[in-house]
Picture 1 (cartoon, rainbow, N blue to C red):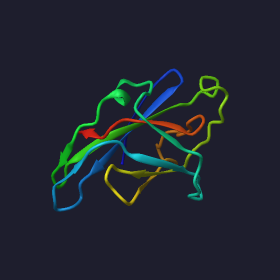
Picture 2 (cartoon, one colour):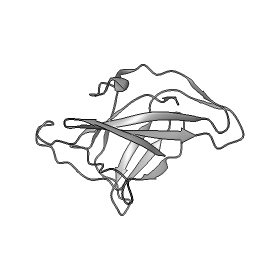
Picture 3 (cartoon, rainbow, N blue to C red):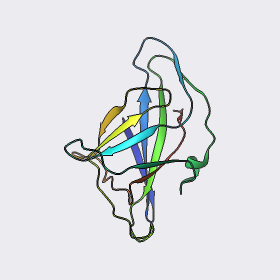
Picture 4 (spheres, one colour):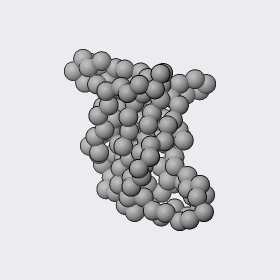
Length: 135
């Protein structure tokens, strides 16, 4: 589900992908929700802000994304990894992320540690979400 990473001084954006694994076409519109979890799957303080982030794609307007079976969509979660930039807020490392796509009821869990996974430590638990967009 984790697709890629980009960064600039004090800012990281992780891009995630969603794939329609059903046999029916579906549509997504809007922003994902997210909850950071520690290594024991316990919730960490998380604030998801829709839009208004450092990266330009966080300021895009949502569009309807039609997903036939096997088709992917993407979204980004960006954050500051510099506690000085965000007013000396604690930067907590998440091991897991629960992501709930727009219009979905059940979250998906994504591993954020181990292997070649990036260091996911948003200062103040703030995540800036992009809308879901076509891949």
